[in-house]
Amino acid sequence: MTSSVPETAAPRRVLPALIGLLLGMFVSMLASTVVSTSLPVIVHDLSGDQNAYTWVITATLLTTAISTPIWGKLADLFNRKVLIQVAIAIFVLATAAAGFSQNTDMLIAFRAVQGLGAGGLAALSQVIMADIISPRERGRYMGLFGAVMAVATVGGPLLGGVITDAFGWRFNFFVALPFAVAALLIQQRTLHLPARAKRKVKIDYLGIVLLSTAVSLLLIWVTNAGRTFDWASTETLLMVGGAVLAAILFIVVELRSSEPLVPLTLFRDATFTLATIASIATGLAMFGTSVFLSQYMQMARGATPTQAGVMTIPMIAGLLLASVIVGALITRLGHWKPFLIAGGALLIAGTYLLSTIHYDTNFALVSVYMFLLGAGVGMTMQNLVLIVQNTADPARMGAASSGVTFFRSLGGTIGVSVMGAVLASTATTLFTDRAADLQAAIVGLGSAGAPVAQALQSGTIPQVSSLPDTVRVIVEDIYAQSIAHSFLIAVPVAIVSLIAILFLPNRPLTRMTTSERVAASEADLATVSVPEGMAVLATTGTVSTADATSRRDTRSNAPMGEDG
Image 1: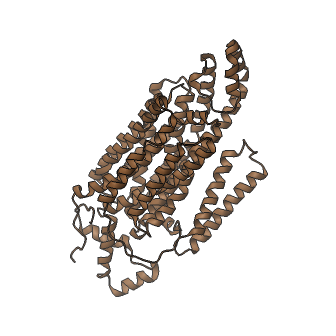
Image 2 (image 1 turned 120 degrees about the vertical axis):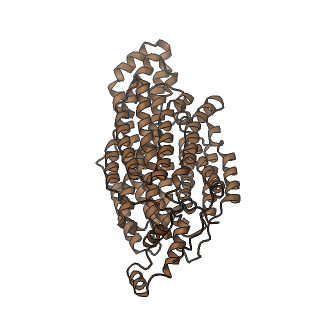
Image 3 (image 1 turned 90 degrees about the vertical axis):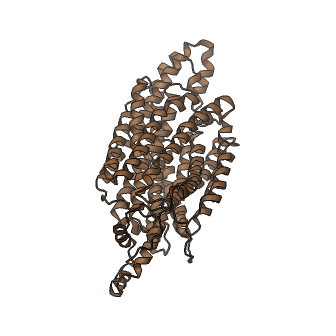
């Protein structure tokens, strides 16, 4: 039988489309990271407390997590190119609007809308990459991904710190606009995806509502329990009970829906299930630690926003080097599991070591800890999506890809909420325990102590770098202990992640893109015997794409690229 799979596109045909896609990802990352170092200043200027600080982050992560599977499902139903352009527009317009916030409530609301666009970029970029680059060949392009991540993740905080110190924090929200326009123009001219067969579609609106309700109630409870109300209270019973009820109803609806938001049949695949579990820890390590590391630099070491951006470079260096080197090795060797195991081990080491830091810990040691954590994230983050796409049914590529991304975002969202709640609770307790020391330090300032005492008693996050030395050391010690204690939350989750990685089926990476796998399965339909075809159709409702792909892979050794 002759192969009907199209010839591999040359890299020069893939790169232009990939550049437009990467620029869209850069816009998303830049708009997020550029404000990371200035958040303590932003929340302070808007008279927010630690709870508000956590929700400024959590609001974006929450809507990102909720919208990711929605975008993934839409990618299986509608034009993916149009969808990713809509996602960019939503993200950037909401980001710009956040620059006009007058209080933390406005900021949180705009950040929530920003997360809707971010969810689209996170889900659609992965799906479209599977359309134009095969799993086996994707490693050779990881250098580009690594470069984009490095520039956005390192350059964003640095740029944000400089802008905040020189012009004010509001300008951080406008810096991504020109890049967004460029991304839209490049994608319009270069991103040409294979035509998709038209079919009748149905949106699972009830599933969307139930998923949003379950996740939102859970996060609101985690954030406020122990502060606004007791852990054992009527509010806890209502919120946790409501979240559990919504989750159960969501499962029932998904099982009965003809177009489920999250097809639960995906969990029959061991690769998808185990990769999902591992992604939760990756998300917690990536979002939680990066958020609170920036706060540690400013609140526990007295750094300015610009200095905080520079001080987090070791983590990004680890992420960049690991993602680039490991990506190249996976393409060259064809083996992925040893690298994922090493990444899982580094996640455990990095999160545990960061839980031991103090305000006066040697910064060289802190840098090593950050580097280890960054390397763990770099080895696991993209590769978990890669191995799921390697075995996923092409007809459900959007749902499968976004499913892993969803649970990674959900892990990060819950992680930030829990870590923020632990941080706030610990800080409150330590401020009470150190009240006598603080009072003595403030009294020693004489008349200059009154405004300092007023600032600390206001409940807002203090600007530590501006505090007198005698008071600053105490406050830095309190926040260092609180942040280090919150890092302990990530350690057991990272251990579970490593266990899940160890049990992942070690399947070889295919050299076929999603569109080529579809073409291969359609071609193989003509060669399947009538009895065999009828038996498979009667059992599953479709011919196994994985089987067709497996047979096709045995006949095709050349790397596959973009078709059209």
